[in-house]
Amino acid sequence: MDIVIAYDVNTETPAGRRRLRRVARACLGFGQRVQYSVFECSLNETHLERLRQQLLKIIDPQEDSLRIYFLRGSREEVVEVYGRDGYVDFRGPLMV
Image (cartoon, rainbow, N blue to C red):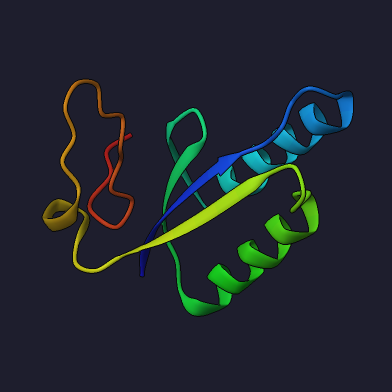
């Protein structure tokens, strides 16, 4: 399944800045950054649950916001991009 993860972490304190880095690192392990606090991921149910649990352990629900959007359809059908798009489809052929 294709999802979009968006987050807003309060960085007014050193603890908040640490949470921000930890959230980004967790997301990088499962998808690719398309904007500063937005990641696109293609996951199975197991990986989605693992990522969700990691993120919920990191964020402070009183200070931060985490959103997971489920894309219904292929990325090409549901996402319009204008300007720079560094997205790489890792399911297709890759050239090194």
